[in-house]
Length: 296
Figure 1 (tube, one colour):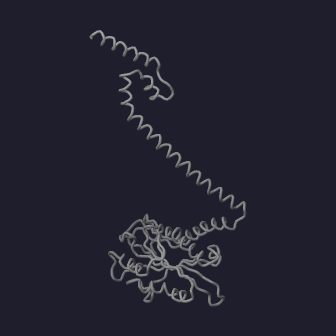
Figure 2 (cartoon, one colour; figure 1 turned 90 degrees about the horizontal axis):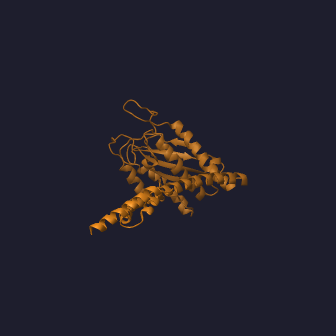
Figure 3 (cartoon, rainbow, N blue to C red; figure 1 turned 180 degrees about the vertical axis):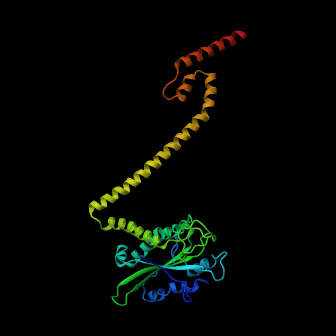
């Protein structure tokens, strides 16, 4: 997977002002594809697809709190799979686009967030992506890449995030954190292999490979089920204990007026009860009844 951080310039990647010029450029192939009756991919972010261009521009351009006029407001990133990676992502454009968006959401953006070393997650990153398809002029081979525009500020519009900084996880001085691009490239490459190797094993692997992967998945699900079952049993046990404790004073009061002391001790101790103690309490109760009768 080839990752390229576009260098800010006076052209479409000029990031000191509005992102409008860049967003317009990111739609450059849509008109041609529409005229040919070929489907187009709209803008997407972490959770939504087919987002309007006007929404993208407004969201990026207004997320600039405390930035100076000459400060970078956004960054452009190209994510391009190799020929073999593209084949692993599907056989038709729709499959490849779906796989690319999943990769961006589940691998690239989470790793991008982690590499700032500021305790960020993918939900802290404000970004929009656009899938592009084109053909090589030399061999007419179909190529696909993803064009990302990422806000300089986080979702909360509080933290400044620059993937072009030369700092790498610094802990002293004014600047804390940084960005390790080499580590990012390594992590997203490994993330791609992990994500698509499993998918291809399910789709194209041998029967033994598919069974092995299925067993791994089932083992993970069983562990999850055991954990959830254990949690449920603990919750039920807690509810039963609470119910017994709330009912015990009522039962105790009724027992003193009747002849059910045995049931109290059976309830309190599931393994048995002290018969001698019960007998002594019953004898004491009968004596009190006799004394009360004599007074009358």
